[in-house]
Length: 118
Length: 113
Image (cartoon, rainbow over all chains, first blue to last red; front, top):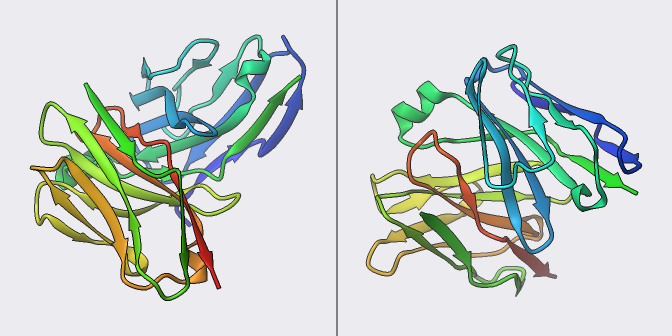
């Protein structure tokens, strides 16, 4: 089944304790992206990646890091989490080739990771 | 720059009555526009997309949206609401197919029996 898998789905941690949220897709998609969802703000993009070793900042990158060493994986790293990073996080992917053909970037989303930083 | 405004944060309808979720966009160039739906505790799922072809776009589950350039709107409609339509709906704009997508703040649809 084509899917985007995020782990963990739920995590409670404390301020300053480094954590990584993993994201993996099995569709050979070039494009991957991380979003955070907060009430009343919709989804805001944190980082995105056009392909292996190609990443760029989205709208709210502060406090986050990413890497794209393999095509299927795009982990989100919080080096020193703070309470304002408490949020629901979504990973998404899409095919760049498909986007060019369709003229639209259609995303496949993971189920979400709910992070609480105390 | 591009932006999207969902005019209602919450819409409540009765089962069997029409649904209208409003979205206005701002984009310097011809945009691609999307509606995504998020059911409780789930990821987002694409409902429909507009990519400069037909201005009336049909999506899944009986939803459709009309692109109106003169009004910079992309409202989502459905003739008859079902209980299963209760969810949060996001209007999304993108200037180029591979660039960052801009999400609206969401509209929560409640369907009353």
